[in-house]
Length: 351
Image (tube, rainbow, N blue to C red; front, top):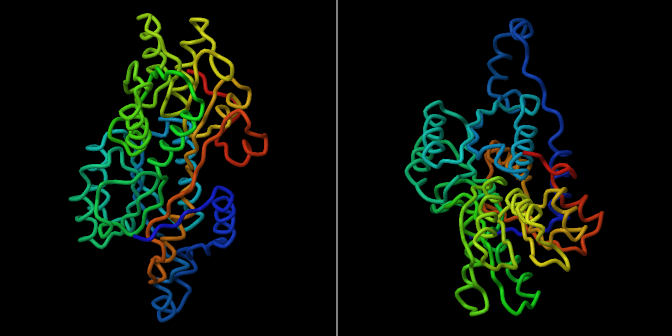
């Protein structure tokens, strides 16, 4: 399997290059100009790549799931717009079965391409085979699935396992005498949850000084995360690390600590860890109120657009699997790094 690892800076540069290189598509002729064209010319122009509207069926997670997802959806909407020669059909859900049903509907409607960010890694083989039989290329984005590479045309994803490993390595470097961890998980079965949970669980299993105080899913939700942490506080059980699998859940966890007057962050009693690199979260890290934030790049749309253009030109995709290289940040992060790597606004959302 070929893999292409792209650094953060390179990713930004490539995105800019792709967007600049695509240029403005010619508009489809109006009915009036079409009737004026000679019949032979009209027939010759039919199917011209400059006039063709490409239909994409986009299966994604709920846009309100997190700041990451909001940025991801916005990027897709901008790339696959009518102005760029696309007709986009979208479906959003955090439930795998609902996503599968929507994908089957898109296949029946005969979309040109199926773009998929799966809620769960399992259960997609039959749908991908149906798409293949219908001649509809499938392009994975954001998240991997458990399926043979032959069933999809390309995969532009984050390495969720590496995100978890990078975070756990950073946590281990803090050299605590004992790690008593509140582990707040994302939607169970998703690639992000599996990767970020897996690395932590491996470390806990290997080290006697690493303990899980509680391990629960908050489904990427800040309020649910706050309730989980509040429950631990009420129980009186000691903890010194909160490992939350996205920024919104870390924010909810911190709200519970603040309500209980428990210090956190650099020089605090509790280490706070999040993922996704929202700008407001990186500001919390920079200010020392959080300790760590792991990067997850939401901007796959320009790469998908390039894959589609390659396939439309009848060419083979050179790199079938593109893995976006990502890193983690602590309180040493600079304003320049926040600007270059952060997503969304600098102001945290309010419930």
